[in-house]
Amino acid sequence: MTKADIVDHIASATGLTKVETEAVVDGFISTVIEALKEGNNIEIRGFGSFKVKKRKSRIARNPRTGEQVIVDEHYVPIFKVSKDLKNTVDQNMKKKEHANAL
Image (cartoon, rainbow, N blue to C red; front, top):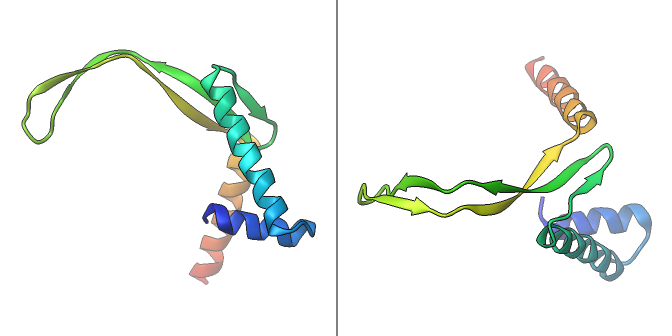
C-alpha cells in the first residue's frame, strides 16, 4: 500500500477531499520526523511507538572486498508495534490462512 493508496482510503472513508487528506497525512509524517529528529518519542495507543535508538560503533566487513570497516555510532528510528495491533494482525492472518486452506 502506498501513500497515495492511504490517502484514497482515508478520503473515501471520511468524506474529505484527496487534497485535504494528503495535507493531513503529510502533516502527520512531518510531525513524526520532526519529533524523532529532536529525540522525542511518539506513542499512539493501540498502534505502536516511534523511538530513536543509539547504535554503538562496531567493526563490519565490506562484502565485496572482505575489508574490515569501522561503523561509527549512530542513531536510528525504530517502530515498535503495540500488542493490540500485533494480536489483531495475527488473528486476521490466521483466519485468512484457514479460509484459504478450505
